[in-house]
Length: 313
Length: 244
Ligand SMILES: Nc1ncnc2c1ncn2[C@@H]1O[C@H](COP(=O)(O)OP(=O)(O)OP(=O)(O)O)[C@@H](O)[C@H]1O
Ligand SMILES: [Mg+2]
Image 1 (spheres, rainbow over the protein chains, first blue to last red):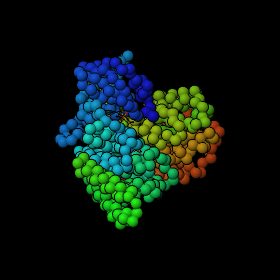
Image 2 (image 1 turned 120 degrees about the vertical axis):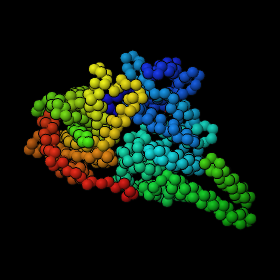
Image 3 (image 1 turned 45 degrees about the vertical axis):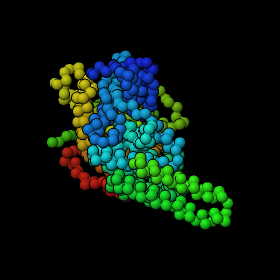
Image 4 (image 1 turned 135 degrees about the horizontal axis):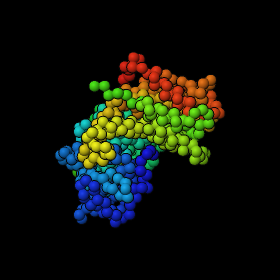
């Protein structure tokens, strides 16, 4: 998609290749490829026995802006929002200059894979986490921009979500640097491409829809009606209809507000199986034993989800 | 401080010119006058990649100091806005390179600076890209083979307008179609800050056989002189940040 830039194929290097930074002189040995995107290629590499992720850019300008944001986030205290940045340099290979940065290797599962594997109850948990991070990011004066499962990582121990790719991060008030149509409110005719918290919150809503449906889809006719229709018809989304509609229509002013609202709805949803449990118990007396087992199972499920919400958040 | 205005021509076509002067030469002339020429070649699944068309698309953009990109029809929207924004960055970088020549030395450019310094320069480039005014003259090929692609072109232009209106700087657009009914290129929308209403102009057009890309480019270059400083409107165009 990117014009006038190095082709992605040109960024393919074999395991064992050593790159040396032109300016800072650090050496990195490529171990394997971690992934690739519109902006370039990411490798797992070793630097003095330490594992790092090396991102090579097709377009150095976009990498630099990403590095600028990562640097700003370094100064944030508390739980890190994304990978920490180690180095940013150029590598000269075969007369070509490739810009790269070395950052913390985030060991985990990319969210788009995690979403496929885990139940929808978990999706909601990830979203609550994500909204907490977004609130902190927005407080630094940036929106994430290109918010989508591919740009989020589920860390291995702890089930906590981290941001991966800050290439789309944009100062609030500017025009969003990078976006992906499915998660872009502009594409759906539900707002501008101006960087403001609501832009990211819309994408959060779309992540939920994507997770419930399992795939992306294209706009047909009027975007708003189509999305609202999807929300109404997907049973999994039923408990969150109101939250989603608000996020998509840009009614939330902050990530915190959406997070609180979402949490409330999750908690309310917890009551539903319990109430339903009572009803089935009265019938269970007359009926068979499996209903009792079902009630127990759903209680355990509920307790489990509650546990996760209380301890992981 | 007045930051100046970026001027671009955006040519959307699907093939070769076959009438009038050489479009590559006209693009070079445009560049001489401070106008960048970007070219988007639209193909659909059924178009074979015609070598000559491709060469022309690249040639025009290279001569016009802009960016070229060949895309499938359905990717048009994303490409149009990306090409426009990248060309802006490219132009600004070019200007900065020239301005910094004294500091950088003859053969050096911003790209040769160490990453930290380059990072600072890129922040300035970003800032300018966000705040400078932008004039884009859009030139759409409506020769017969483009007919089926025109609805997508229309959507892409609306999308472009939306992307650019999110910037802090002002934008102005004008729209020419070629070939025109009587002339080689026909102006359908005069300079305006809102191309939201291109929809209707697209419905009226008929498609023709010839493709006078060169003469059309020339018309587009001329359109910038109509944008004299006096009638530079200060638009009240405010966007709706809030919910719709
Ligand atoms: N720090 C990291 N640790 C582990 N894996 C990573 C890291 N950074 C990137 N990856 C992997 O590489 C993939 C591509 O990375 P990234 O999204 O940063 O690239 P990109 O070129 O900016 O992509 P795009 O712009 O298309 O989203 C990710 O989806 C992820 O799987
Ligand atoms: Mg990515």
